[in-house]
Image (tube, rainbow, N blue to C red; front, side, top):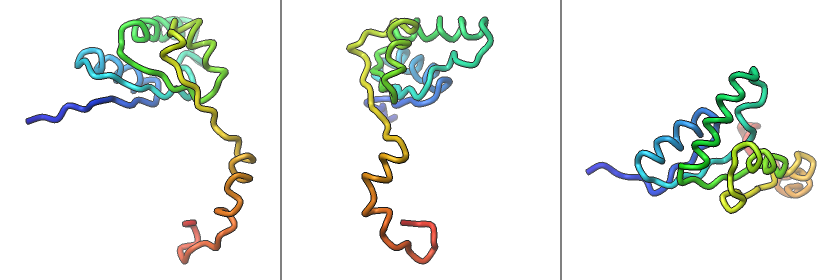
Length: 117
């Protein structure tokens, strides 16, 4: 018997598009972690194509979106036409904040390999 996953988790633009399409076909919910939108840095023509695909997938795929920065939210709503209820924002710590919060961990002596904490 084949296993059927209960959820599909996606990360990159290409995997996000293909995975949401698979999710739609198989009826499996998905979670897409967006670190940046795929239409940035493309030619105007290719950018329009990617935005169009994003709108279609956002409308029809059973997917929740995790955005790693609040600045991605406006584009998600305006360009991808995502509903705010589909979006969660997870703020990533800046390196300086991370180091301050993990000062005790970072101060521990390293093991013999010299690289591992």
